[in-house]
Amino acid sequence: MVKPVIFILGVSALPLAQTLKTELNGEIHTPDCIQGGDVSYAKATAHLAKLFQQGRTIIGLCASGILIRAIGPHLSDKRTEPPIIAVAEDGSSVVPLLGGHHGANALAQKIAKITKGHAAITTASDVRFGTAFDEPEAGYVLANPEDIKSATVTKLAGGDVTVEITEQLVKGNATHLIYHPRTLAIGVGCERGTSPEELAALIKNALKEHNLSTQSVAGYASIDLKEDEPAISALTNVCYFTAEELNALSSKLKTPSDYVLAEVGTPGVAEAAALAAAGPDSELIVAKAKSKRATVAIARAPAPILELHGRQRGMLSIVGIGPGASEWRSPASSRTLETATDWVGYGLYLDLIGDVKQDQIEHRFPLGGEEDRVRKAIELAKQGKRVALVCSGDAGIYAMAALVYEIIDLEPNRIKVEVIPGISAFQAAAAKAGAMIGHDFCCISLSDLLTPWDAIEKRVKAAAEGDFVISLYNPRSIKRRDQLERAFAILKNHRPPDTPVIIASNLGRAEENMLIVNFKDFNPDDVDMLTLVMVGSSQSKSFARGDGRTYAYTPRGYAKKREIQ
View 1 (cartoon, rainbow, N blue to C red):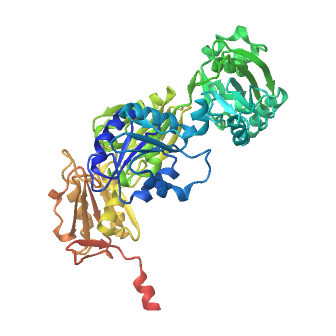
View 2 (tube, helix red, strand yellow):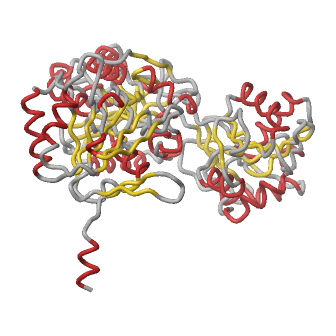
């Protein structure tokens, strides 16, 4: 779950912000000039607008007018707006401004209990009746939200409004509200390679034939052999069971099959999966229906299903977090880290993402042991967990993505895998230095732990002769001391003495160090295992500016274009 934002403008609000952070598992956002927060911002109104557009819950320890002016231009649909709450710095007043029926009223009351203040609930239906038509209990869905306004007006005027709870497709009106309980679980099965369209059509027809609402469907279920089946993966909220788990329900099946039993170890997939997902007290209300290549069955639970039984398909995200600084981390990387159940990675990398830590379980590894990390991440994903395998820089550049795919190629499994890219060290170094990779470039690792030195030497020579800007990864380590000198000996024959060389260490971290020197002045002793070395092409240049700093760039050829003009 994404943490609520606790937004402050001044240091005087920090003590209450820290209290609310602890009580609500929140995230403190402060101006750049204030220490002690989790996220800093430059301009308050722009930051608030961005958070609102992201759907984040905002608790502003500030005047309500500030929140209103920042968010007002972005208001569009009350049904989708996140909770926005204004809180006095001393906690005496707590005012839900938006999203009252989407959690703001309840959260305001919770904050008021913490601060011993007053929750100023202004929603008419809450004040009069203690509840609202558009805020049903968990597990229920309002079928005709378009009638809410009329129904509320009628109720407040003393008129009658009836409520019906049903799984059936029933039409409501301004004085008759329909709520669908999420009590149905749909079991599905299909042949390998069945199209998503065929399965979706079968589900739609089964619901229509029995006049059942899709809003009463809590989710879908199948056997774990189908975890990577595209037709089933295209559904939302799918859980899976082993053949043994489904076989335990064989006595409750209406259409058991000896053929299916022989093929997958259970006499039925769709019916058994529906019953398993809906829980032990469920009943099968729609027996197996078939299309050419798929099957569907529907089970009903006696109460709304708040969480499907079974396990989700495992998800392994290989996440590049960039050089280390949070502002250089992509939004996709942050979202993936926030929604993961487990983090796997080198301890230093996990420390660098502490600002998004919530309740994720950390699996820390020392430097090295890359295959152990990958296998642990795959093992967790196979258990149905959402796993983030954390890499510095970009996950696909000298990182773990290739090893993950190598292992699942050798040892196939059904987990879902995705790669979330990040800013790599060579990009960060070039940006900090100016524009060193403005023309053709390449990256070469000098580590001979996995690649023979003869192969590395050939690549360095080819890159030197091709006049590429060359980023040298893993230039030195405690045990490897001479590869960097040998690489420069090759480059010496192909680079002018004044070719700029970037020496970049700990980019994006507190210990960051950037140095630009001429090729002739390069000293290998300035390099350690956390350093990237970038050697310019024969066309690369460096120059000093009035701020005293040296910058480097590689021209792309615009000078010749200007000469022609």
